[in-house]
Length: 284
Ligand SMILES: [Fe+2]
Image (cartoon, rainbow, N blue to C red; front, top):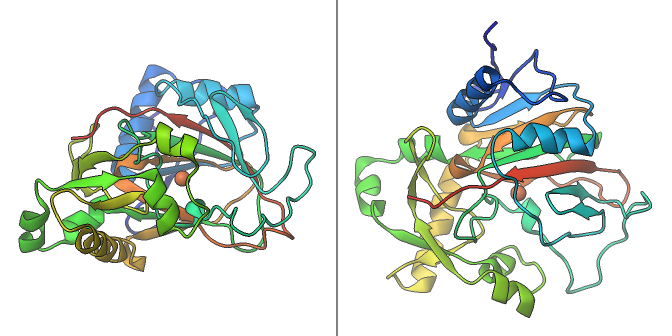
């Protein structure tokens, strides 16, 4: 029986029932999920109880998984699986970071790994412990934002290249400075400012806090233009805010979205999610 996605908002996000994600999908189900992902940009599967291995196996059905080199803020890591958490490895809430060691990147609008030559394709996030208040994941549709631009703006932006850079992302989000090792691993890269989706050919803006400036334009001027575009693209009318329930498996399409997490009481409430990411390819 075909899957019937239920809309989660007027513009983006659908819930899909009837899929047991402990089992890797058949070719037919996978095709339907991908179609829904490319069309609706965010998919939620409810009430999933997945082991780490089951999450890896389900997400791996959609492509090769990214190997994670960094593990921020405690938790623990396997090469292709990691945690998004405010807990240490013993399960206790982590204390505030020392001054100057803060990382604010997850609460700034971004598309996963857009500072790399081959940015992330799909991210899979599974809710293990979720907050009562705050901590939503917010998604803004860069496809719908692009479509809403006037013809003059589309023509002006067409063909421009945008430089994405981890070190600038850290400055943009008022985080600690990038380390020398991070600078070495993630030098500046360029991507088209208007990106064509590899799966369905739809056009999107491709921006966010990892974006530094516009190639061939004065850096400050380009940065100001990118932030104006980001403000436009993240208006409420382009946003779906996902309120987490335990067992949610949320899958999102990085080429056509920016996302961020909403604030929560991170020194009082526990928040623990499991994460895998399917690798992407070159941008065009
Ligand atoms: Fe992210």
